[in-house]
Length: 225
Image (cartoon, rainbow, N blue to C red; front, side, top):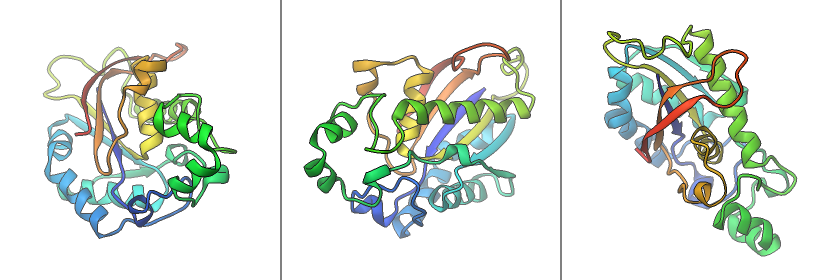
């Protein structure tokens, strides 16, 4: 199967480099254009090519609106499921603050978050990257299972394309989910760049079967697409 992890388009808080977390900030005009560009680009092409499509989104309006635009412009009418487990990391004490102010007040924590970064780092009083990544992967695995896409048959020959799960979420949890899915820790995780607004990470493989541990078997087919 193909797992597309798409970050939402730009908001005014993104433009100000302000930590959003669980704050429900709408797309700005640039974000709307970015979502339409995603639909017209490789992400839209992959959605059209799949033999089956399931789409899920974070409940936050910036992600939900991005998902709606991408689906409408690429495949027309498509069911979209809202899942609260796809929300961004809670910001704790950082919620609503600009990153420059965060760096000044919490220099060590900001360094571990923005400069290194570390899977076990996160906003002060908020959620760490590892927990957010695990949460998103678990939600995606649940939606694949609900669609009947089991580890044994998702890549059966003759499908005419890969079963495709579109997950529209947020930058921090997408980056963490990619690192965990690929088994990248420490310096290998730190080497994964931040993902830009309305850009996607493309994973191909399968989730672990029922009763199995770990994220499954995945390869990275594209990043920042």
